[in-house]
Length: 312
Picture 1 (cartoon, one colour):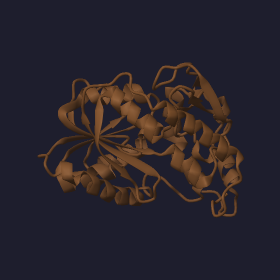
Picture 2 (picture 1 turned 90 degrees about the vertical axis):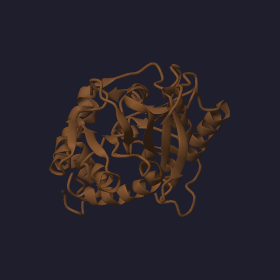
Picture 3 (picture 1 turned 180 degrees about the horizontal axis):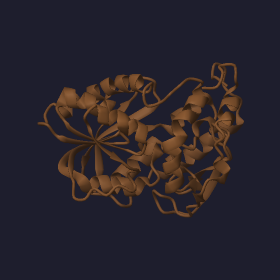
Picture 4 (picture 1 turned 60 degrees about the vertical axis):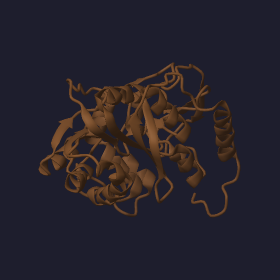
């Protein structure tokens, strides 16, 4: 790690990551609703990279556009992701040190899911973006799940393998299930990292059993920009999608997932959904009034003085 006296910008610069030169694609159609009307909200992300965040004028979905390709993101997660997050926070965050936080998170998810998993007998469990396997191992001890961790980062997969958990090293977008089905699927602190939310949710809907359980949580984009009173601080290249409750619930309905429980984290930053499979609603959209309110609020946050007490 760089010296503690370095500024955040210095620490990030010392990584030498050239985001501007990475291979990227522009997506003319919204991943949620298919519309082609975009509003550019920001021109840089929280790290200072030239990563425009754009919002769909029809549904309010906020994405990086243009965005790095699948191959570029694969390299990013192999080599740069953890060092970049470490540089941003000024402390080492890697496959070993992150596990303490993951253990605390496991207990929170246990409390949320116990009413459902206690009633299931040794269910098959797929942890999408399962990192070091800490959550999967905790669920194995507590609920007797037969766990599989899917993650693109080799160092984190190695930690999961050390826990004797079945692993798959891949981005979920490129993974082929080959007929496998699961009774429980978790996507913990992962959906914001996906490159294709619609396709991934459809894939998970196809491989979950008819009476299965799907749990997913988002970093609430609105909570993030209101907390720091900064849209730029809420945008980052490791989150191609900046999701709100409204866009998430439209995604779930379109894919065929029905929320049976919704939970706000203790720090009010995350929103979790416990879902059952249902008939897809392919035309589901956020209410128009909520989209208009979202754009008005964004402009207010970008232009109004920061309230007293909000960290700058």
